[in-house]
Length: 270
Image 1 (cartoon, rainbow, N blue to C red):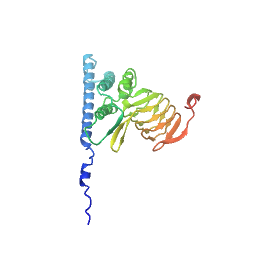
Image 2 (cartoon, helix red, strand yellow):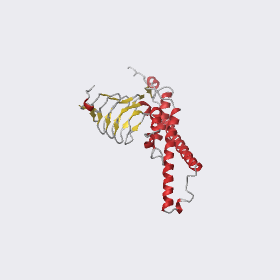
Image 3 (spheres, rainbow, N blue to C red):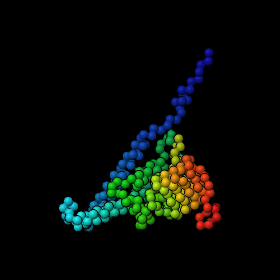
Image 4 (cartoon, rainbow, N blue to C red):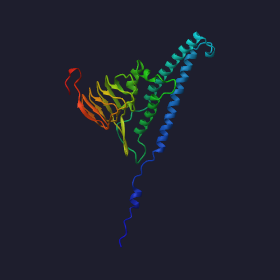
């Protein structure tokens, strides 16, 4: 009678998946620390500025008639604006101290955590503070996209863009996203510069050329290149590394080419 082969040693020697709980908890702690620090510093600087300028009305708002109430409302409006300007300036300043992670594929198993993923985690915490600012940071989107702050946000914080938006899209990896001129991104759309495989994280640049329209709730993964004049249908999911040609209309889950579009302004298709 032949003994069955013993595969115990082989199973024990197989690389085990890394326990992601510690890394995720560190990410949450960084997120907590970043939000509290940026919010607290912006609040303290705004209060100090108003105190130095003696900008608050002398009477308290609980004693206000209509005229005094209007003065308090005006002061609070200026205070909120100053808070948002300082908040955005802090984001730009902190971004200067975080190295930009290199594009690449970074395995989840074996060895120490790659430093590129550390930089990406720090930028993720900063980006969450960017997109989910605490009260009274509800004007961060407007301040970040208006001069003079937009002249700093694009080159330093990202994304590199020659467009402006009426609605704020979620740019998950602004350092790895490039947007051309007159790009329209619909409500609740998401553009990423990364994607996850089962055993690795992949950081890869996403490029969206001029005159592209992306419908609401669409998702654009890392490594996608969208040619000039193309359109992405609402709710579409464009898979990683997809190349979409100029003046093509794509839609669906996953997104596929549906048809060619007329070239803009009578220009011939590339």
